[in-house]
Amino acid sequence: MATEETAHAAAEAAHQAGMPQLNFATWPNQIFWLVVAMVVIWFVLAKIALPRIGGVLAERKGAIAKDLAAAEELKSKAKAAEGAYTAALDQARAEAAKIIAATKAEIQKELDAATAEADAKISAKAAEGESRIAEIRAGAEAAVAEVAKDTAGALVSALGGSADEAAIASAVSARVKG
Amino acid sequence: MAEEGGLQIHPMDQFQIHSLFGGDIGMFTPTNQTLWLGITVLAISALMLAASAGRSMIPGRVQSIGELFYGFIHDMVEEVAGHDGAKFFPYVMALFTFILFSNLLGLLPMSFSPTSHIAATATLAIMVFLTVTLVGIWRKGLGFLAMFWVSSAPLVLRPVLAAIEVISYFVRPLSHSIRLGGNIMAGHAMIKVFAGFAGVMGVASVLPIAAIAAIYGLELLVAVVQAYVFTILTCVYLRDAVGEAHH
Image (spheres, rainbow over the protein chains, first blue to last red):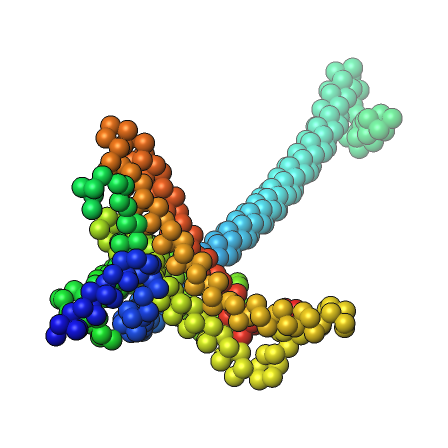
């Protein structure tokens, strides 16, 4: 016991003098516990912490990529919708223009028909009027001839002559024509 | 000792490893280093498990921190070690988080930083060295040795360069581990030295205390930068094993 104690004291003295780092008696102990510590740290990191963090990072990367893709898709969808809207608008415009043209044509046709009808009526009326005028004129000529005949007969008889009816008629009609 | 009047500063005492429950230090004895290794493991596990528990599409604060770590190291592995290096990502991540947390937790007053011990950093560096060497030989066979033969150099120089390349290859774990352990140790020791001055200088202690504050800020930077340097060097070495030849 005593020798052990003195040996221990001597060793202590030796440590005190120099660097504790170079006290090789503690090296096996230090190395053993260091290796234990490193194995524990490695296990905690490699088996638990790092796979989890790596997973989270990969997941986040994936989520960001997915979100970007979705945004891209939505953008293209919006573009397509805009295109469809523009196309629909153009189509509607074209349709409206067509309807306007058709309506105009129809109205024109009706107008033409009405005009034609009115023209026909007008010309019919004019023709009727003309025929009436002709009739009246003819009637007037006949009346003139009759009046002339009557007047001639009356004049002849008033002058004391007796006139042959036929001779008067022919004389009057010759005069009226002339 | 202090009563003797002399300036007694023991900047290296803080690195002393002692058994938590008394007794000698055997192979499996829990020590103060074991305690702080455990705290480091718990801190990393708490952060990374909390960061990955929610798994929400829109990350919260803790999840953002976890994703920041993940993205930072993942990009580093992919860019530096190459695409084939991706399967080493959890390993590199474990290295980075361990060194970073150990460095930063070591800056808490009264704490202990496992990365201030060469035993720890050498173990990490040798693990990287063995990984690179074994994976390189397994994947490329004798072709792995081609990285020592600088085919772009003139023929006469090649054997000399090969010797230099081989030496530098085997020196890698040494520089890899001492860079980290030395930086952390030096920073802690320097703070302790200034603290020792502050203890005996009376009113003038404001100067060393101001220096401690400044060094502490520098050490925060060193803690992060050294974790980054160790990790990116690991990626550079891994490229020798899995990437395309770059000589």
